[in-house]
Amino acid sequence: MDVAVRMNTKAHETSASVDSDILSIQLVGIRGIGEVKRGEDLAGLIWQAQSKSRIRAEDGDIYVIAQKVVSKAEGRMVNLEKVVPSRFSMQLGREIGKDPREVEVILGESRRVVKARLGILITETRSGIVCANAGVDRSNVPGENNVLLLPLRPDMSAWRLRRRLQSLTGKKIAVVISDTFGRPWREGQVDFAIGASGIKCIRDYRGTPDMNGRNLRVTAIAQADELAAAAELVMGKTKGVPVVIVRGYRYEEGSGSKELLRHVSRDLFR
Image 1 (cartoon, one colour):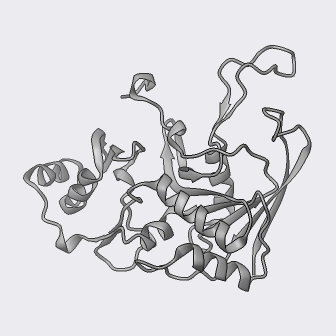
Image 2 (cartoon, helix red, strand yellow):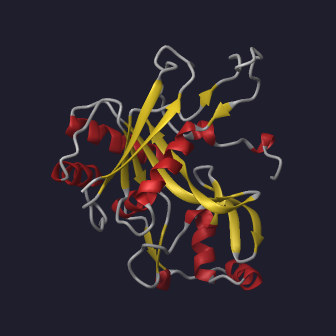
Image 3 (tube, helix red, strand yellow):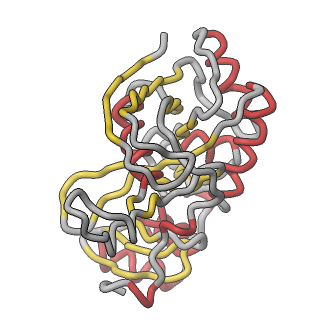
């Protein structure tokens, strides 16, 4: 049975493809995908579960897919019993109170360490994402000593899934791969887009007038992150809903999530 949430939003005109009509946005969760294993056709599993639930596909659908099922299908699981930590990982693990084997895995997934404190390593991953522990996670991962890594190339993963889903559904769709991160300055976590295909990740309002006629100078909305966060309301963490279709949201076509990553030269904290 699918899960649906409806809400209204006002979209301001930013291009010929996005107008100012009131939109009804629907979030439809797909159940029945099950535990995904390495090498499985994830897009095929999604479409099979979608068809079984009698959820139609439509042009413009945005498939928000949880990172964990993508990583599982791509075989991004590591057994810590097979990891031999370096001397540096052992020392750093002692300093922050973290399993040195996990530290070794995190460092192997990182370009640089931004901060090490309170049992957490804030790192920049090889794909440029700044997050806790390089996205290495134990939650919802089978096996006591297993950890799951982020996809090596999240945008490529999104592109492959989009191409396959378009072939299966016969519709023009977009894909966003989401993961849960903490945020500077605020408690709690939200879902962010770590990979995307078929959708422009930022909706840029700069140069357009606000409601008082003043030109906006800095407003650029990370719509892919907002879609990921909205989809998480349906996904949850224990519902077994790793895929949500966002329907009715108008967007420009784009490629890749790199525009969401802030360059170090513009980062106040690195």
